Length: 363
Image (tube, rainbow, N blue to C red):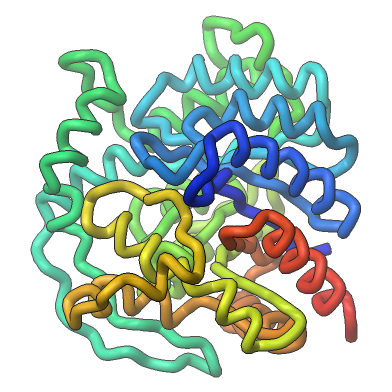
């Protein structure tokens, strides 16, 4: 199947991180039954509503709980640890679950520093490209300067540490895995781990992925305004490698599916408030119930804060969402679509993925 899953291990309001992690393990087992291709988990820190703070640990648990689905990271952030530690962690998982592990790598730490120095992007109007909404860019420069986030960034590294250039870090990861480093990572060297680069723009991540001939994951769900630039930059930079003869792209999307559109929109209500908590610098809140979402009094500024993310979700019946994701795949030229679904109720989330898998496989 050309559908995969990105899971944040969301913590529903009124529940615990342990509940969220048990839900993630259950969803991975069900996803395997439904035929999904990959099950990735993200790396997030200091978020009251997200339990996926240690991807390698969680991926090991997921690999042990499943048998055929590929498991991996979307993404491990190299700004927070060394290439050697990442290769050892994923090499260890591969040693027990060979041929099933994806090492998705991001550069959010360096990206955050760049955004803090960046000038406000030019305001580009929303546009529709062959049926796909491309919203105006959201200005993240203010968010990354939030005092809470600045302080948290210092806690993710050793005092005085400086993150090396991303391209050099990727080269070191590949050298450790391929046996081309003077030091030998055990486990890790020779591991059958598929390396991916994740990116939200046409910047260094897309360039590095293309130049190294690695598969690339573009974020429509996080940065919908720049997804086309990211994919184009990757393809333009691509050089064939031992990993890939041609470019390979996976594109992410937020989606909620139910038996009918009315029910899907009810289940999706908490998303707006959840995104607001992220973009105000508080960190992802415990995922609210529809009733909690209804109780929030929205201002115009609130609505503008979340508009690009809300407008680019795929919410509706199985047929509606499957068709929307097919449009996303066609316009971006993606080889796969990576779906993130969050609802307050675990069974609603499971059912959403089940319905989507069924609809996706229909001609």
